[in-house]
Length: 344
Ligand code: UD1
Image (tube, rainbow, N blue to C red; front, side, top):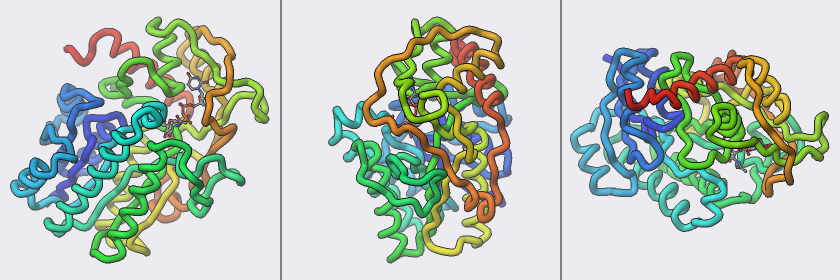
């Protein structure tokens, strides 16, 4: 019998790609999402890729009674991947209570329900943002966690702590995945990132400028102490990232984990500057993107990239897709979106 996996936030950007990889690996997937930052149409898109329609439930995890009744009728779930969370850094600074309430309450309600259900396997979606501005590069999982620079980042740190505290006194087994910079889209061009309003992140801003939705890309700062003066990040293809979730679950199910909570960096281990990303995008897609240089964005760190040795040895996972593949898939998705792929 296939393992049944609950994916919270399964219609979101990373969630939807993970659902596809789970289905391809033979897992049965159930999605919970409140659609606050995604669309139900994504469920159909997933079906177009895999031929399997995931079971979908529109639920906000903060609604404890609705969640309880969901679990009453789904008491045979073997594992959970928890993505559902608010994720805009700037917005979290403006609305801290909304972020704390949503991101913490959702996890608390979920863990509470899982304990009742005796479902003990959880994979949690965290971020390299917990390392802040690292003293040493590349960043290992042992690098210090520094005081969070935004409420969003703080919710990731606190959620990691909640998982550790609960794992200490219950049979819960957890894998915490710290993502570097996920970009790109599924090679089919059927699912991808769906930023609402003006994008905050680099690649959606590049693709929207290329398609004409944004006028000009602002490169935030070209006076950093890096080879070309622009910031360096560890960009990772979202499909590689999704596959790491499958490896994490398999490790839990195979009982290969060495402690109740394991933490992994997910990146490629290699950094690219903003200008390298921009130039590669232009080259691989044969299109020009209008850009200007502007002030540094507050809160940006000059360079972050991962040491990924731990994921390689323990999860037996490595990112395999190139920056070119990330940026050509992102462009295919943007073009499909502008042609109304989600309306078809
Ligand atoms: C951001 C979040 C991080 C989150 C990650 C998800 C912040 C401070 N951090 O990381 O918590 O996990 O997204 O992908 O927001 N850039 C431009 N012009 C733009 C947009 C970005 O030059 O219009 C530059 C930025 O200055 C940065 C790089 O591109 O150097 C990457 O930015 P972005 O995609 O926003 O990711 P992060 O800031 O690294």
